[in-house]
Image: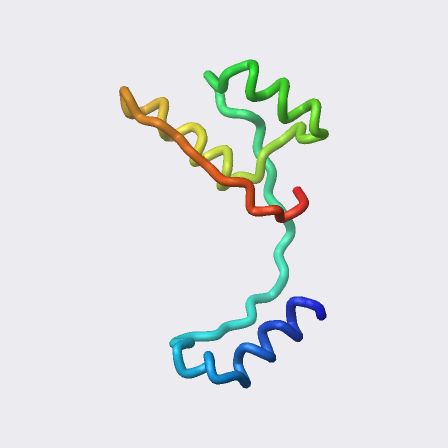
Length: 83
């Protein structure tokens, strides 16, 4: 079952009453960015070992923000997006 079929299935199921909004957005080209200045070299090395040379722009922006806030901690979870 592809993603479109999963969404259609949810929209026609008993769960549909809990869905308050549904929109299909057009595909967009990915926007990439380099690792922000100050990114730990160990993190960059691990990502490069996994074939990741650039970040998506929103990831780079999120990674850069903690450097503006002393004592900030950035945590994340792998979502299995395949990227």
